[in-house]
Length: 348
Image (cartoon, rainbow, N blue to C red; front, side):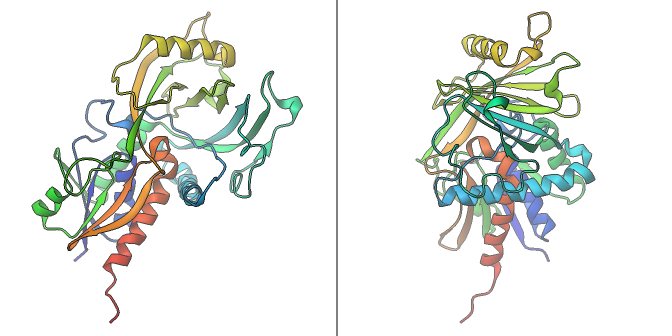
């Protein structure tokens, strides 16, 4: 009989961990207080993502591991883009512009552009006015709501994964209820064994606009990220399968305001007017929705590690901040490896 693993959390990390585990022969049950099929909620971040992948320079060993997760995910997405188009994944042109780049960008280390098809640095003549550094490559985009629905549907219909709705207050509660010895903690904020959340965890509020641009808008087939001198990131990300274009965004640390702020939207519109005028129709944006979500971050970065409390085995996979989609499959592979190591009989 297949070994059962319980996953707590049904965001993109939890769903993807479930996918990797069932692909490797495990029986999986997912417990969460919110699923992709539920109404939108600002605390369920995966529905609000753009989402796309942009490479970034490595500053430490964790960055190198995250870079590995991202490349593993990208290889998986290349296969899905061809074999499972209902996933919504597409590969298109990606562009980045920096008005005041940190030193790590002009002095990028080996690995930054690895596996990025068509990767190249832009010459001074190719940069817009005010931009000091830029790059171009082929990357993926996806329609976040469609993708997580695709994952839930695949897990349910193909693999028979059971989804259980429960508002848990501790991980110990899971072990007590199900008498299971392995639990994957994919709760975003890091639910702890005896209750509460990881004290290193914090949220980053993101507000974006979902817009419907003109038919001839170049951003249907291009994602662009622009960092201004003041540190603000302004990006456009198309959502495939007629999902419009995401215009973002804000990165507001420990800001728990759950509703759209008009001043944030106004700021986004003004930035877009300067950087992405092709989004406008007769001088106005056709805004279909204003999105607010809380990226679950963690001091020191994502935690992917095992913990043993008595006989209970916990595999932590939380704190991805805004990188959940980008590293999801790589994290799933790592989680599966950690579980296999637990499952191996010890050698006396």
